[in-house]
Length: 393
Image 1: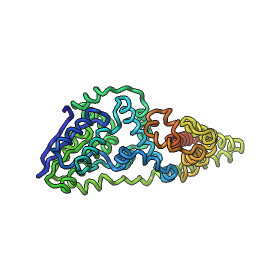
Image 2: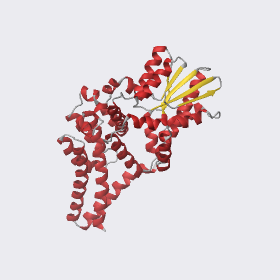
Image 3: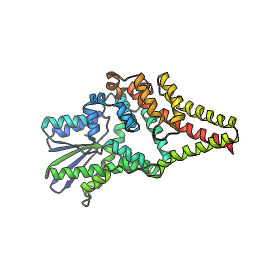
Image 4: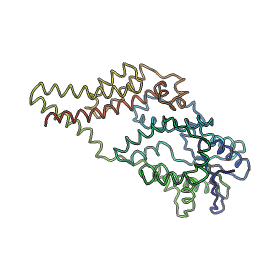
């Protein structure tokens, strides 16, 4: 077996970390062989409850309430989750390997032998939230663009390339360079999860004293987790509580939309004060720029013509009311005119691996309409705002 391994003694227990690639056939075979060796009493896997449910019970996607997702402000999070899954799905399809096969293998093989399975990863929603909140505003757009670019890129990757990356220090080197380039992203995405999973394994040791534990984790987590597991001062309950906390939003950014509304209102006031012709000219520029860019975003997403028209009408209005966004209106209309079918939910993971698939699948399309029409309206607000004040100066 060529899979990277780390084994360490912690008190009376033995912990073995098996490094895997999430779309590698060889990794799945290594997991199967190690569990069947009967050398382990407990199996820990790099999954949270949400990812476990998605992997083992994909039919549960059909129970997702899109209206609730949009109303509760979770549309961006769900869209990002789908984009991440699409990236792995595309790699798995290229290699002819089932997505998450090594994790499924760990779960089924452990069940066959009656071994307890412990989910040690942090909830993906919390991780994405902490990633997003740790970045300055201008980097968030870059992150979203990069996420979709990675999910939809057509670059072919061979199974040999994955195995070569796994066998040496390439993953560690890549993560180190990544960390230097974007610490805001790498800390919650990599280092925090290293600490979290190490803490969860420490908890498992207390729940199963003296047992032999096999932890199936991504190869890139191997070094960090090993270092944290060796730390005798690690307080698992405190650390888990700390890393599960979603950082509160800063209070001042919530005033920005209201400040923009006030400034636009002031612009209209001075425009009409100078002349009614100029005032109406500014109003129409606001409507045309804001509405057109939001409608363009909806059209790129493949929205129904009624939804595109709604974006044009709604965006100039919702941009002056920070309590509701253009995306909430357009997504709601898209759901009414193109209600998702059971097939859309069933094929969601597969369809989101390509951009045409996002536009074809009614569930993915609704989320994409929300994101792109909101983005178009946001860009339109700034473009129109600068244009308005440029004519008043």
